[in-house]
Length: 130
Image 1 (cartoon, one colour):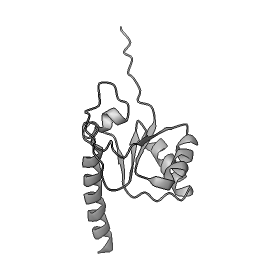
Image 2 (cartoon, helix red, strand yellow):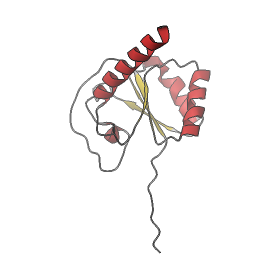
Image 3 (spheres, helix red, strand yellow):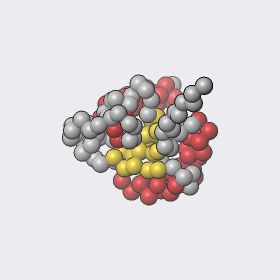
Image 4 (spheres, one colour):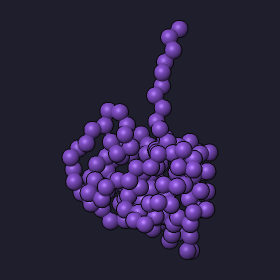
């Protein structure tokens, strides 16, 4: 029987446009031995798979900026994500828009993701106020 080697995706926290919250996010990620990548503001046109360092993804060369701030999680299991979110709350980080890189969105851009997250956030905020 041949053994298959399944490559693991490193636990990575990506951030976009979080300003002065960067240091606190880096500390929260580092406390769990997770890598932090700050997405440059002009790279919102790039796909998530490329930005997260997935093999097979290359830069599409699209320079774009997007409004909003978000945190994107890659390669983090449910239990580890819960620990990270707890560390973020403990650090007083308030970043409402959060996402996980999935098979569905890894080929989508940060700009697209921010639009989708904003719609979801608005819908949930309206539902909670009723």
